[in-house]
Picture (cartoon, rainbow, N blue to C red):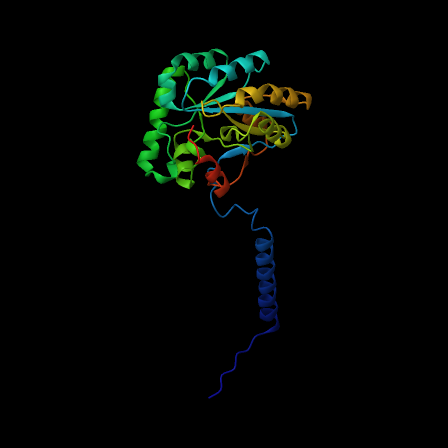
Length: 271
């Protein structure tokens, strides 16, 4: 027995147009696959730099141990008239050095959290991550009299869970776009060259004020002078972000986890 399927011209045209539309849609989605985000909620991400046409830049300093380097760095900032910078302080260090913390606060510099236990948070459970961030928040709020809203995670290490939990706790995760590599003690000239050759509008510069960074206070005056001569103004990280939000631009994020190169670089030494 033979079966015959009869399609009239109108149905054939309809199916043909549907097929064309489907092919076209697939093509658009493929071409724009890196830009299409409407199919998933916006994921929390770390801030590495801020898109802006203004010549503004943020100097940031991580501190988690020692007392020999922070004061000379503060002296340089005062001497050079830098009124805005951001210091990411570990909670245990802040408890041990309230006098230095007071000087940072009295100078008007922004305080960010550098966590509590200096460990890779991506290795911790969700509850442990929350405990670390909350413990640091409580200690830093008590020591500084301010409640930090920015966090730079120990070793710059994070994953999607850490980002999500930090956001739930009302923190912005701050990374960096220019790494001075000062903790490697490359020498003053190399640190100066690394920073000044990589700096750009909206940049967040990573430096350290822990005792292991022996050349930072020596390189800092030349870095400030060179960046100023290039036309840059120095702002805190929050000011950098707020300027962008005022302009209605999206803060630039990168990835939801640190790159292998960054992990290799920052894991060698603890700050």
